[in-house]
Length: 635
Image (cartoon, rainbow, N blue to C red; front, side, top):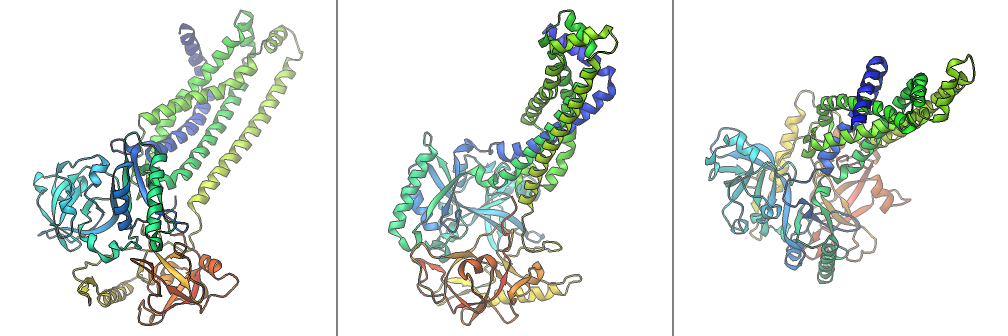
């Protein structure tokens, strides 16, 4: 320890004698270490920090898997069978992320659009959490005909109700339905993401579109593994259940299996590749900085060769001399790390501002204990990398002997040796810089490409507004006595809305769309190419579907590659011929070598027994082809 302290004092004294060299080296290392600290803080917040639930590694998200949709939503009847048959989970809950119109009953404020979720009564129990105040949902709350209740999040509680304990029992309006607040959930609940209110599944349990096994209305399944159960055992259990359902319901469940992912991976896994690429890029930047500092260290050590030679003559061994040089480089690295942490703190606001806003974990990025420990490790590694080559090169006994021998003579080979060393130094520095900068550039290019994959529409100057109409104002009773949406009322509302929006100053075009890019919805439909043989059960083709008004392609600035856009006379009406526009990928796959314009597609939507045996309404006539758009959020 005394030797180390002696080397440390000597290193600080020597660096203070060369302030220009010290400042340049510290700045170079600060940039490299600071960039690594900042990006690691993001990686730690998004990918490494555990979810805020008890035993989060045992929480899994279950989805249905087919060859067409590797991660599709869960059928409600399938969920019921999974829950009844499984033996490897403590329980399974059904969850669907859903926005709601929310207003305090009797208040003057207009309803707000709030993200929420529909969940089964066991949702909170599976997460392992309890309400801050009030109670959880009960099985009675989750039955058809039960009194409508709601759980609100801590943020809603504090901003709308001032954190008052009297919030329990208050009435709120949710999508036109009055509900009673029975509990407040802690802010730590992040699943589904951005949710602030939760309602039970109760009224959906008799909804015709939900109880059909062939329908997949956007649900996901949450499960918690039993203690002592492995992932392999759970997968085997679910595969057995899926195979049994396939035999029992071949029309709806053929080839359907269960996809199982850790909850954290399901939430942020799509960002793993991009963040790892970014971490690799800043790692290359740090290596460039270390190479430059190492060469500066070597040049400085060569200038001190006589000093080191004298120390060697007085008995200092090679390890002793090398340790002194490594101590100096470590001091530089520690100073660079301190400056780098300051740079990282300054850069966090900009990094968070550029991060996806719908993933709360990006907003949790901070310089915490793991980030500081990482910075310390990087600083130590940088100090060793920057000092090990100069220490090995200059501490060779033979070289120091030559320097000492020629110290008292004129001429000799020492100058030539130093010149060759400097030449090698320059060549090495340039070579390392080129290689590492090229690697960093290629990594950043890969990251840029991942984040800027062509989306084939122009998102600039597009204002998006989500609208959900209350069913109580836009419904009707059908011939069977069921309450259903009144499409004539809905169509009239949207037509009036579009007329008023188009009349606003600065509006070039306006359109209505369902399942548009990046809206977090998922909607697929089964189909059949008219005139071709019927597909076997479980092998029916399906495709993602968007329902849009005629000006949609004008708003999105999506060019029609072939054919035409929709006209004002075309509406989705089952009683007359309908038009459809397909993308290039669909055309190449199902109409190879043919012009699809004018050809027909049968709309074979699923019913309770699988895809409809007969088309639902008249055929869809292909009138146009557009480019393939990127609908999922960049990751």
